[in-house]
Length: 154
Image (cartoon, rainbow, N blue to C red):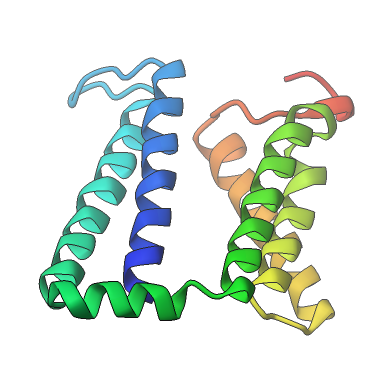
C-alpha cells in the first residue's frame, strides 16, 4: 500500500512541476528554453509513477486491495501526510517573500524531520548543503531565475 500512496504523491508533484513549467518558455529540442527540461522531468515523474501505480494495483486482488487500504489508513499516516503537505504549502507561501536561500534550508530540514530524521544537526547540514547546491546549479550555472525575496530582486 505504501507504493500506491507514494506513487500518487509523486504523480501530484509531477503534475505540479509540469504545470508550473509552462510559466517559462519551452523552446525546442535544438534550442531548449528554461521550461524545456522541467516539462520533461514532470512528464517522466507522471509516467513512471503512473506505471508504478498500475503495477501495484495489478498485483492485488480486489478483496486484498480493500482490506489493505483499510489497514493502512491509520491516523498516524494521515497525520504524517498532512504534515508533509503543510510543510510544502508553507514553503510555497513564504518562498517569494523570504527567498530561496532563506526558505529552502528550513524546507528540507522540516521534510527530513517529518519523514523521521531526528538528528537535527544532520537535517540542518542537509538543508544548507542541498539548498546551496541547487542555488549554485540553477542560478550560477544555468541562469534560471530563483526567488531572492527581501535579499534582493533578481
